[in-house]
Image 1 (tube, rainbow, N blue to C red):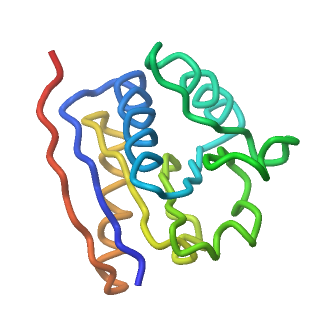
Image 2 (cartoon, rainbow, N blue to C red; image 1 turned 135 degrees about the vertical axis):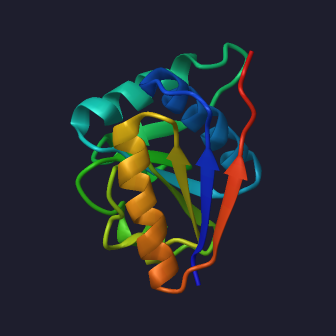
Length: 150
C-alpha cells in the first residue's frame, strides 16, 4: 500500500514551498528512489525545473520534464498532465512529490507519495481535503511538522 507523508511548513509563500520541494527531492533521490514531481500546471513544472538547477550551488539532481528527450534517462521527472512513463511508475522504488492541489487518480502506482503543506490558505484548504481523502481510503498518512527556517 502506498505510504503518504505530509510535510507541514510554517511558511506562507510559494517560494518557501518550492524551496522545500527541491530539498525534499534531493533527499528522496539520495535515498535511492526514482521520483516524479507532479506540478499543478506547465508554468509550475517549468519553475520547478529551473529551481532544481539553482536551489543549491553544490548540488546536482538529474531531472527532466516529462516528454523531453532526457525524461527516460534521469531519476527525477517533472510533469503536470498525467502519470510518467508507465514503465517507471511500476518501479517499487518510485516516489511521487505531489505539488498539485488535488490527488492524481494514479497516485497509488507509487510506493510513496509526499505532499507539502504551507500556511497559505489555498494550500491549506486543498491539502486538508487531500489528507481527508487519503485517510478515508485507508492509506497510512504520516505528518512531519517542520520548524521555521531562519
